[in-house]
Length: 335
Image 1 (cartoon, rainbow, N blue to C red):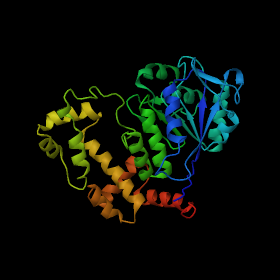
Image 2: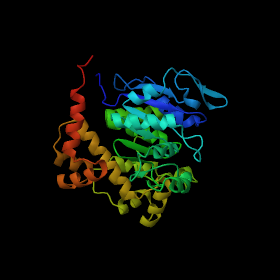
Image 3: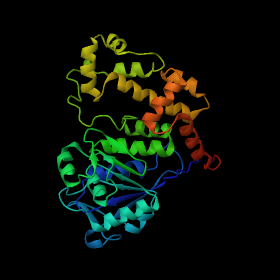
Image 4: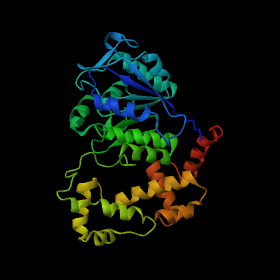
C-alpha cells in the first residue's frame, strides 16, 4: 500500500562540530529504505549550515574526522515539512544566526520543528520555546534554565511534543523521538515495525524518566522482561500491583522498587501507557466501537477510555481515528 504522509519531507540541520550520534540516528531512521514500511517513505535532506553563512555545497565538519558534503542548505531547510536540529556543538555559545533565522521562517511556514538533545538550546534561541515546556539532556538542565528562563524546562522526561515544536532528551532518546514522529505520521504499525528492525523499544512515552538508577539488573534471572511480556498480553484484565508482584514471586513493595529501577516509572503508570498504546493500534487498524476497545485495553468503559486517551494523546478516541483515516484517505490506490 502506498501511503503519503502529511509530514514527508525532513530537513536535518548540520552545523560545525555537532555530535555524530545525534546526526546518525535521524539519517538511519528517515534516510533508509526498509522492507515492510509505508511507500513512499520520508524524503530526507541533509542541510549544511556552515560557518559564515557558506551553507549548501560547503562541507561542514561535524567532527575533525567527519564532514558532511551536501548540496542542500537553508533554502531546503525552510521548505521542509519537518526540520530536525541535532545536538549543539557548544551549549554555551550562540547558534549560527543563519540557522535561527531559517528555523523561524520554517516555523512561520507551518513546519514541525524538532530538537534532539542539546539542540533545544538552538530552538530556545529562536524564541519558539518561550512560555512552553521543553526537554533536553538532564546534564544541561541547570545551564539551560540559566540561559533561557522563559522556557519551562522539564529535565526528567524523554521528549515533549507541542505539535508544531518537539524537544527531545539526549543520546538514545533520539531514537524514541524519531519513532514518535513515525508513529504520528504513519501510525502505530509502521512505528512498531521500524522499532523491531532497529531492535529498539516500540514505544517509550515522552513522560518516562530519562535517567534510571539501575538500568541493568545485577542478575539475569532478576530481569523484569518476562513479567512485562506477561502483563502486555493481559492488558484486558484488571491487573493490580499485587497481581504483578505475585507473578514475579516478590512483595508489592519490592516489585515497585525493582520496577522503578528498571523502567523509571511505576507498574500502574507503565500499564496505563501500554493500554493507551494498544488503544491507538485498535483505533488505527479497525472499526471496533470505542466501548469494545476500552474492554480490550483494560480501561473498562468508553468514558474511561476517552478520559485517559485524551489526557495522554491530546484528542479523544473518535477524533484520533478520524484524523488517522483522513491521512489514509490521501493514500493512492494499492500497487
